[in-house]
Length: 289
Image 1 (tube, helix red, strand yellow):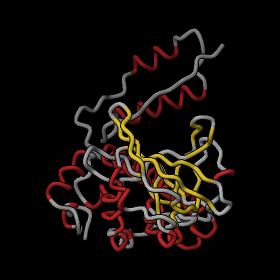
Image 2 (cartoon, rainbow, N blue to C red):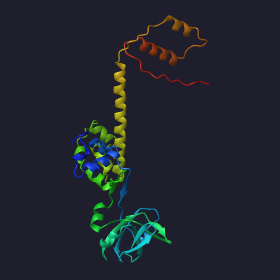
Image 3 (tube, rainbow, N blue to C red):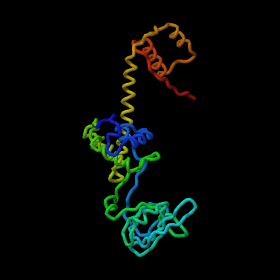
Image 4 (cartoon, helix red, strand yellow):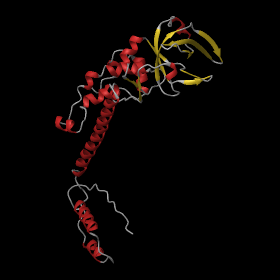
């Protein structure tokens, strides 16, 4: 697997998925590796219903306490189920347009529901939460799940499954910094940074990965500028301008003396325009008071 391989070489990415990735400007493996999450979802330790706070994402371990009731509400169908936590507190949990959940949830079955609590009818509850079995949640607990920018038809799960297949590709990223520099500056290796931008194990690792990728992007940019500068410096000057005595006379007749910086600037420009390579110079100066 290399940079220019199409995304459809990945398992689960067919022609339809490839078209959806293309809408997100992801056409090949390199672009998919650079398709960073817009945010991350965490999976905290479960709490009780009474400990929930409005707007603060949380998880609650609870049991199904009633069968689902489906109520029409304008263009929505409200799917309502009572859940009870370990303390015996009962909350009515609402999902929107998901009546099939009636066949998913069984009485007294344990689930971990995750979401941002809101206040409804004076009671703090969770609307349309994600739900996991206890085993599923234990595998996710205290981890970070990437949330990618999407387009209609492209699911976050599909992107995650595709990016997970790039682990071997990330390991091929060539490291250009030596181990002493990485250790002295507490930096991740480039291959580890790419992987942890997508699947960090904790916030500290995510910050280190982001810092290394930022360093890498600036490093590439500066190297590109240097290559461009070197190329320009070696462009032959086909319009060589000879030094003219009238310029020296003009400077001598000025009602003031040039500063040291002004003289050096003039000499640099004169050296460029009379030299064998084209000039590529920006002259910047501040106006004094």
